Image (cartoon, rainbow, N blue to C red; front, top):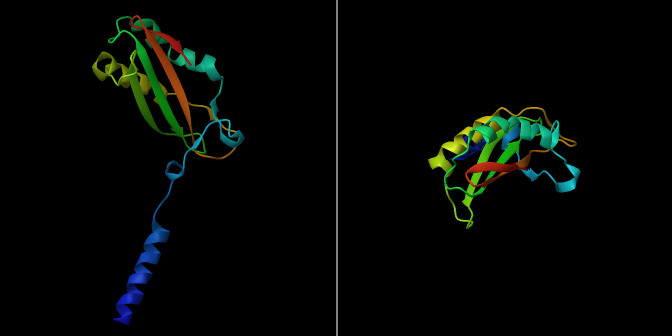
Length: 141
């Protein structure tokens, strides 16, 4: 019985040390906390340029009014870990713009964003918000 207990403890110890962790497994801190200051090189002009093509081409978005928020989780080394998305209509009710197609295109653009800079080495998130008005992307902030 004693040998089984020792063997079990030994196996759990080895397993806990052997589990591989990466930068994306860390706790996420908000970009504004404690002077972390995570941002993309070029800030808002770079974001507007990245989304410019879709902003000009999408002119019949349904529903016609609302907001899209992309939450980009960025590792401490500046690598994109994952994206969370939120879509609401003008009445702040959950929706899908263009039956979910618009968010797929926006995510592909966000995946292509590089050059994330940080002042401190923490995993953080950044928000990209798009205002949809009259079936068009009116503002990116």
